[in-house]
Image 1 (cartoon, rainbow, N blue to C red):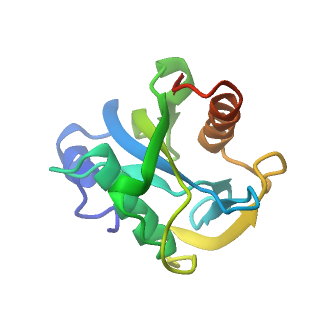
Image 2: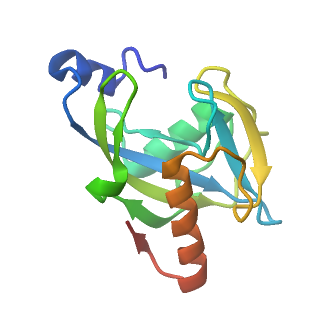
Image 3: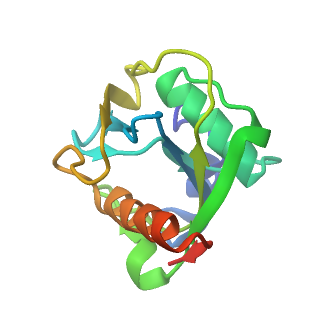
Length: 164
């Protein structure tokens, strides 16, 4: 889905650039060799992970599977998602965008090791996809993705849900 017409776009028509509290999801698609799928944002050129905001009537898992499919063409069943962390601390997850909009993101992070389809950029939100080991991610890596990678390593190390 493009930004125009989305839930966030409709909210912005009412509140302008004021702070919005936004639920969302981030997906770590992990191959057997440990490589993770990174995407390059078409608008900024920065590298990130498949992610996006919730739409009306969607769940965290539904948001994760929809965003993954939209941005990369990859299909994941909700039952194959493993929630491993959440992002919500205002000082870490408030983003000011170039046009003046401000969002405080509350995101669920999911791990997926089973999927169908070959990743490819959608040409709208993503301009490239790349498999890379998270210890050596592509650069420049956007801040939310860098924080998500840290949470992924903490989850792998500790084996428990991470909160940030």
